[in-house]
Image (cartoon, rainbow, N blue to C red):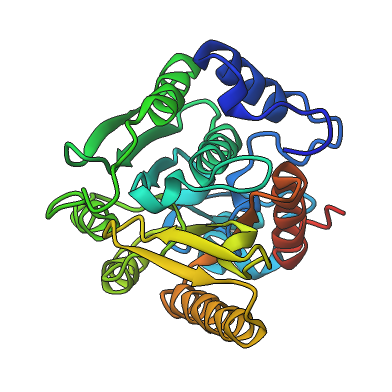
Length: 307
């Protein structure tokens, strides 16, 4: 986090939960006050019912049949206007336990999950979670209430670390996504990951057919470029393989940066092709401010006019 704001790993779980709750319930700008439509490009499209037109409603959602039948202007409601079920899919693979800046990616992921949870929390809305880990996928069924929301975040905070090379079948991000393919109805699915694994592209596209989808990508600056620090021992968090890297070699640093740029561009393209909204958060930036900017940008695109 920025400035004097503490990192989650510097706090006890209880302090961390309280800190996150204050961040997202007392924002003076009002941008993070229980409005899930600020997370994704627009409201859901599945028609639920109609209601009388009110000043400020989008005229593109006018229900002309109901208007003619009642002689009173009506607009179509969607499921996104009513009760919302939000699923948070949290990647807890070994690569998420990495961070060289203000926090590790695992802490950043909890912050992103908190943003989604508090943005979508309002009367009647339910929140559930799928959290990957060394013991398989932990599934938390969706329920309502602030107490349940905090239990979801506590589970995210308490998730065990994964040893390099420990991830096995049934524990990956793709597995967590595949498990959501048969969800009833439609809702919001927020996937928080560094997307460094493979195999998540197809299940992400499948989920997007029925649900609003937000992909929150976590990035550390050392994943984008190498510093010139001489001989550096690096470990692949997914396989555990070690390698000595001569970082004083300029050409090697340039090739690394080019490869990292290509990798991130491919991740971005895959997310967009799946039909998901894309939010990239970095461990060396003010992630709360980046969330606020994302919400403001999406609301402007949806005609909300928030600045």
